[in-house]
Amino acid sequence: MTIAERGVVFSGEAGSEMQSAAFAGICVTPGGRWLCGFRTAPEKSSTLGKAQLTWSDDQGQSWREPISPWEAPQLNGKPGRFRGAYLTALGGNSLVAALCWVEASDPSLPFWHEASECLLDTRIFLSRSADGGESWSLPQYVDTYPITMCVPVTGPILVLQNGDWACHFELNKPYGDDSTWRHGSMMAFSHDGGATWPLFSVVSNDPANRFFWWDQRPAVLAEGTVLDVFWTLDNEAGAYINIQARASQDHGRTWSEMWDTGLAGQPGNPVPLPDGRLAMPYVDRSEESKIMLRCSSDGGRTWPAETELAIYRSGMETQTWHRQKTMQDTWAEMAEFSVGLPAAARLADGDVLVVYYAGPQTDMTAIEWARVHP
Image 1 (tube, rainbow, N blue to C red):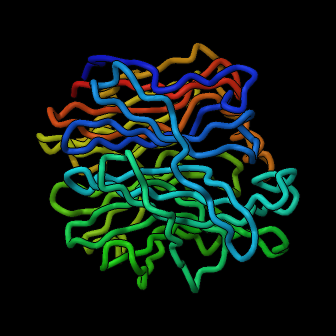
Image 2 (tube, rainbow, N blue to C red; image 1 turned 45 degrees about the horizontal axis):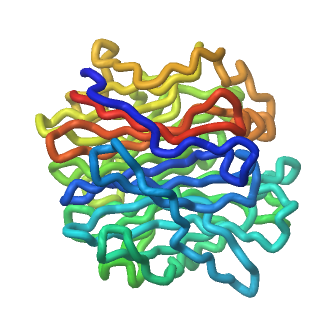
Image 3 (tube, rainbow, N blue to C red; image 1 turned 90 degrees about the vertical axis):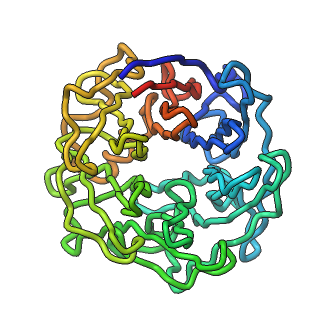
């Protein structure tokens, strides 16, 4: 594997409301447009950020000025902001964006409240474009009832082999809930192109509340298998373990047992390659904060070291603490990361396009891209 090209999608503007750029997603249309959604904010931990959209029609050589085409509606009488936007290409010039809505009635409140382990109310909306992202429909609320907890979306809509759509998200406690936080990864399914979401599946949940399989990054493989990978915390030991994975053979309804991928780190989404292999970017913070990529030839069971490619090296010491004593420690650690969250898409020629955020300090980051020839 080699890096064919690399570049910058957007550089954070020092001292501005767009100093921190993070949480990117990438989408490639059949016509070759690269679309990147990401969040900008004055500081990484700020609740004052907004979802941005940019695109390139010349293979990443230039990017249009970012726009914020989605206006966040009120929900239950409370104002909100869109914290993230994750796009899916549907064919032709059609796109759907999964938008992460966060309550903004009191901007002084943190997104994550450490003492109570609660999250600001977080919901999912969809918006559609029929012209390659030039214009967008009014955001449509995704009703996850009977799930009433906070539901931060974890990536773009998946189009499954049977034609259904899958929307994937996590479960978090809302402000004011003093119960024990029990993490879960979920999927909701739509048979009608996102109009209704009547069916749900539990992708990951540990009844003992020891393992937190979070930041799920699912992908639909060529034969229809849904492979999901997880950044995994051993809550009892106060330490991350290797990336875990599981698969579904029935369009996300039921799931295999978890397996250990042998990879330490935080995964991005796997990408099926034309030759049947999978490519997956991930963040390795064991010794130095860096973005890496490996390939698998056995459906994601193993990711041999000889396939490894370094996409980005920060030159900085690890940003992972050796041990988190509490969940508050874990979130405090995440808040300090200045390198992370890769997302990937396959290009028409079989190359893999990877985007990620990186910068010299927590609140000064850019969105960068790399084109990998596998």
